[in-house]
Length: 293
Image (cartoon, helix red, strand yellow):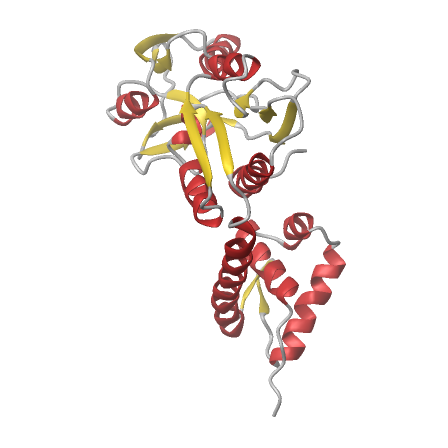
């Protein structure tokens, strides 16, 4: 009996459905219509002779066979991508000077950069972690080739990646934090800081009294202060340390705006190394933070 060759594109769509949590988002990610992705899933089911999905209330979840196929799909795609990168990556070399704010230096970006290094071993990426304003000043002086920055979408060189929401953040297990006639303790960056400005402005509009109880210039010490209960803070809510949790209106806190996350590249024709790094950052940002509107 002949064994069917599973469609690599269909496996990639299956992986995207599970990673992004839905068919519509997966279709956008793989560049197909939702109906085309549905056809891919039906083709996989016909090839395997097993249903991959089942209804669970209003949700659609993997069957036991679907879960097994998904595990193999990830391994197959990893091997496929590793083989492609091993051949293509060896032909790309050079140096890319990349700047990013501390919010991403301690979350998903180091892992993404590590994966990029394995895929393109001849490319040297020099990473600089500084506040947004300083990074863009260095880019304008020609000291950096690529910068990931927040709330700088008005620049002509801005390429919007995502608009993740700001979040109130407190220690894990936090209950109600806003109490009548109380003063809310905040852990904040030193000014200027747009997270600080957004949080305090939201509290002022809501008529909530606050004080800067813990002020720092380091993200690591900010997390430590929040985890110790010295004050709550405002940052991005993705990939938080396990000692922290997101807070919201259920804790008595007002809504916050979104962050405009953009890439900024140096002017001129980009090198192959810069082009590939930019693509890797774009892909990983959209995986962790969602696509730009």
